[in-house]
Amino acid sequence: SIAFDPVSQYRHKKTINQGDTAIYYPYTRMISSLLFLSYLCNGVYTSTGHLASQHDTRKSYKSFSGRTLKESIIDLSKDFEEAPSFNSTPETEELLSYAKGGPRNILGYVLLKNGEKLSEYTRDGLPLNFTSQVYSATKSWTGLIIGMMIENGNLFLNETLLDIWPDTSDELWHNVNNANALKNVTIESLLMHTSGFIDDYSKAPTSFTNFTDFGGKTLQETLNVTFFLGDDAVNNFNYFAAGNIFGYVIKERTGYTAEEYANKYIMPYIGINPSEYSWWYNAEGVSYTYFGMNLNPQQLAKLGQLYLQGGLASKMNQVVSKKWTEESFTPHVLNATLGDTQGEYGYLWWIDSSWNATCAYGLGGQYCCVFPDKDMVLSVLSETFPGDTTDNSKYTREFVSLVSSLSFDTENNPTSKGLRKYVVNPIVAGLLLLAYVWL
Picture (cartoon, one colour):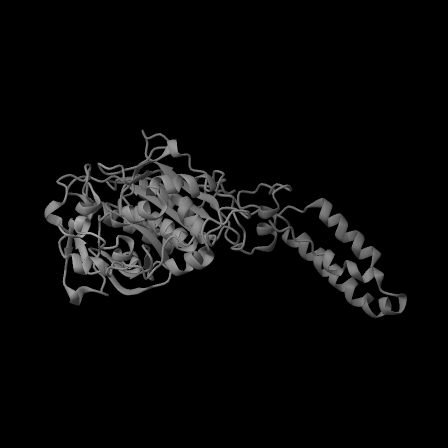
């Protein structure tokens, strides 16, 4: 939090001798006058016409200065606070109207700006803390775990699967299809979908509500439920939707499943109780890593806000380095396509230049999008029906596009709930007046 004190910058003049004071006097008095008049004209306001709390220095500073505090760090172990203009601007009313109207299948969403909830929606009949499967948005959580492992020395980007599971015997690799090609797959290529492998869709589930063991019941089966596109496909983007190789990599190098690792090293710092979400796993108890998490919109938004804050869960807790968040959001693949989804790809994050956003994206319209230029995070969950995922994704993409097109400039635009009200802070105004007289 930053408390702006316009007087403190000139307070040091008192110690200057009388001769020097005569030199500075006209300027200091003029500056104090301008500051005082500026403060009276601008005041401290909120767009709903209520005085910002004098104990909330972050809100007061934002309102006073009109600047966006991108450098402010929200404590993610706590619930997001509502913004003064929560669900009350023309823009947020437009979002609510879209989410509620027609057969759009949106279960709920959370929109954050400056770390506060600007808008939130939960479908009627659902509990506020409902959870839903986020499918491939799980990948971005996996990318977080992989980044933490790399920074802790448990893993390296250029390591291959053969490095992870050395060919000391034929027990693992002997009955693996395309073993030689798989042995050369690197950790980085799995983060970018450039390994040349995709899912063996002949083993795909028949229902979107039952992915049991789709990624493989054992390590050997996990390696076998893959399809190699050939040497020409290596280093090109080919989406690997459901494989669980990373699930076994995490288990091999840390001794934890992905869920256990997250519950120990991530969730406590971002305020997610293990009992309040769930994570699918296979017959051996190994968590899936390319899909499988059941979250609510606020929990999913915690991931986006963590990356927006450069890996900081609070001012005291760095979950992952800022360097890793930047690497994850860097376009490593320039032409990435998955159905209607097109853009660039980082480390298990989609980068959409048309939205100026980086997104975790899951089957059927599950999104967590980070808008760095607007200091915003959007998470939205949609209902998925077997055979109807394309339409759901279309509606949700329209919703994300709508969010990206709106300004949400709460500092500079009055809301439809009333004209902006300017309120003079009598304490600071009095201090400025005293400074004026004293100088």
